[in-house]
Image (tube, rainbow, N blue to C red; front, side):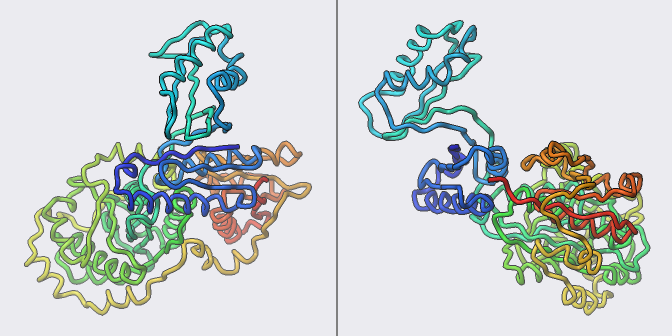
Length: 511
């Protein structure tokens, strides 16, 4: 099976050296993401197209879905490859592939060509089109809106017959534009801004400020990002689990080609210090400045050159240009806001498109904000005067106690519950498989288990906690997700909730 990977157009206008570097990087990213199929895969290409050849068509749908989510790819073509024949040979190949499909339908022939040939692309189109019209039962040629498109690509001495065309993610190859630290709270805005950063080729690490612990005040708006009016007193574990799930989901789906870090900063004491010592209207701005100070120092540790936040200008009171300028002045490095001019509904729409909407929606929002009357025009001198009351050793302690983990290790601190979770390669008699993936996810068909006689339930991760207690208690349930990480997290928490009839299904990739 052959996939032709077309580059994001902005890559093709780069200088020769930069373009070659980005193509090599994209080729390496593709190999990394498709590692489970390494033994039956060949990835090649140096300039304007990358070929991904798969020995078996069985894994084709899984490989295609992975390719669709790799930054830097504009289009993926499913194709067949032949040595370049003469015009009669090209027509014969087109007749074999499209003869029956053209019956009673209009068609058009499109040919793209690269290399030196004694003919033009339009010559191929005219010859093959005339032949198909003559030798099939097609309704005729319609160059404007054909029912069937016969797509050919001639590359030097090879002919590619294009069978299907699929949109890619676009953007630049991951890792080609440096590294950033994204301040993620679990809400719509920080999730979408993280996605936009990685789509632009930025290796994206995650930083979560845990406002939980012993803090019992409504601090919505404290999380740095557009997710203002958002949780603070959820009881750190609930919020922490939701944010780790979100980060795992984004990494697994969009940038698993690179190792990234997940940082948790304990910020409850910082919040308490602000509540006790800072004037009420200045609390929100001060808290965000403290977060940027901490994030700037952590960014240096993880090798990130800039910070990414989900703020949108004027979305809430703290996000005026005046306030943002005062907040950014302490960052110590560039602050990138991918959503700066995006309205909330568009952000939610994009969250739905990338699959993070349900993650974010299940995190409760609070109406109360950290300030009764938050300032919209913060003055640097007044903010600095309030910060002079703040004990900076509290911030130092928060940074010193930050947990920096690989994204693949974020479930490691589940402790004994995680150790108790059984990991199975296949179901056993009496088991029921629960596919907990988001509805938009594809790839491995958990339904294959059902066809083998194993019952299958589809309960998205965000409904699992509520629906699992209603399932039959005398059956064992195997949670399934793409890489097993989110399944392990949920299995550990179900164990903590007293459910012992739980395990994780991690089948081997198909061959």
